[in-house]
Length: 204
Image (cartoon, rainbow, N blue to C red; front, side):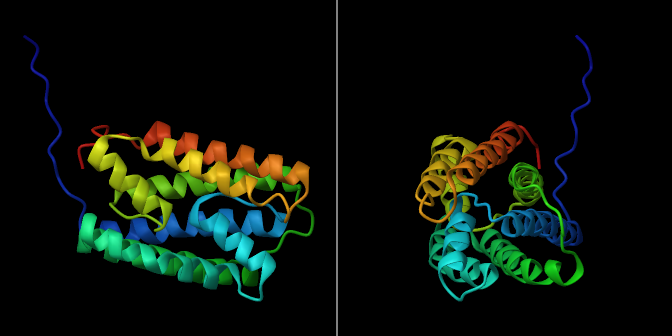
């Protein structure tokens, strides 16, 4: 019988968690900036925040932070205080970084379809970084992760269904071509999550 060396179940340190949350939120907020400058949308809580920002004086960052407030009750009851604290910090950082990115970078020529697709790719990678360190970006993410832990429903599949519904509800805000690009981007984002975030795939 072959001797297989099993990796040790070593948890992430607090410094590793902090750095990962900063890195993950930087990536997500950069993807959000691409979508915002292209006039595109995405799903989940971010999609709702996009709608609010397009239809009201509120910025995306402010809307995103406020929309997530009701979900912390579920997070602290079902996912624990550590998860809730990390998620609160992650949501706050995304809200902050989406305000700061445009101060340092602006695209004078940006293909909206490229932005819709690549922005969601960047966001998907950022989500995986956060999930691997037991954090999320609130809202539907909290519900999806809780259902995955409870009944084994993959987080990506639930988010994909909800995200498509949110984007379809945005038809009165964006043009049909941009809506289709936004839906394709949301599908790509959630495929990234579904392929890379499964129960039992990682040991820590």
